[in-house]
Image (cartoon, rainbow, N blue to C red; front, top):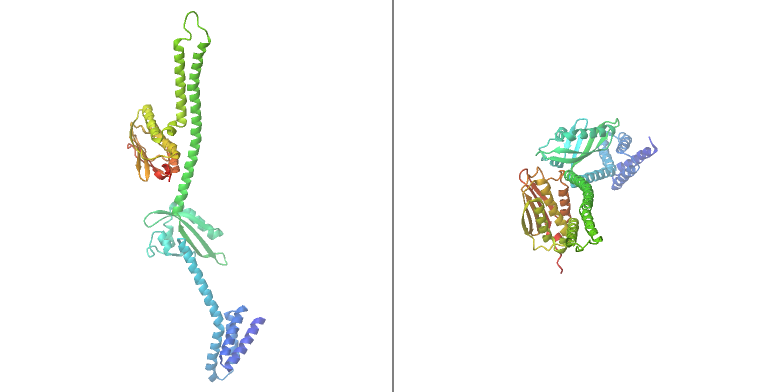
Length: 453
């Protein structure tokens, strides 16, 4: 017996003895103080019971039996008062625990997570109502059976989930796994499942609790971001390729076209170095006219190259005349009829949007010429407040899908990027044998000139 416990028994015996002689409120107060002090010194309920039993043996048993009922009743009242601090402390712990559990439930509920509680020894399982709602069931539809959830896991993810659980139970590694589940209605959704097991002294897991969280939207966003990054990577590589091809084209035109014309011009002008023989006129009448024709061809070639690099008509006359000129050139070059429906004259296009919209129409027509096999194209530019609609529809052979993943999709990717820069979007409708329809929907707020106040 420790010194403190012996002292406690002595104090209890003296206090109970005084109370039995004179049952007073002061004795009650002393009992409460003894209990409070014992709890502060780290004594437990069993220690209190032992002190009370020893006091009864000393104070009550030696008394006449007729006195026992009164003495036992008074002793019980004294002992109950001594236990009051312990009871208050236990109730406080219970209240704190209940509040903590309530806060945990609120936090989990706010996170939209469904709770589960599993006994690995008996395989008993509990699913919270929110867990069942994530699975697509009401509270009374999904049984609290582990197999009910296992059956819903997508077969492609089942092995990964099982291995993660086994690793946690055996090696105490973190259990945090993402997998797909099939809901009651057959919808495939992604969930994140986390849990923590409890092990006994022998290292055997006897309980595991955790939660699942619906992460379908996050997964879709991640997939969209991944696809967007892949498209941007492919587009960037294509831009580099196109840039090199454009450089090669310009170099070829400069060499084959301008170079040849300049060589011919040099040969023609060299005639002027030699004086005429006899009475012939000098220079020959047709020499200068030929030189003038060569110079005109040079000017046309330079203008053609410059127009391909940047259509000057955009800056001089504006977007609509530039598109009209583009259509005329397209029809003449590819022998494809273009039906125009341009009703956007009321739109005062700002300078920032002109080149983007011109290149979108140019790329759409180029795709028609290269891939569609069409004989006719309808081009529309309409004002439909609050948008400007640009639509290119051909009567070609169409495609199985919108072409966004096809080998010739870089032009479409470029158009999507240009539309995005203007705050708009590209919509594509196509089917095999039904032609190809491309529609750019652009907000007027981003393409119209701002009006001065």
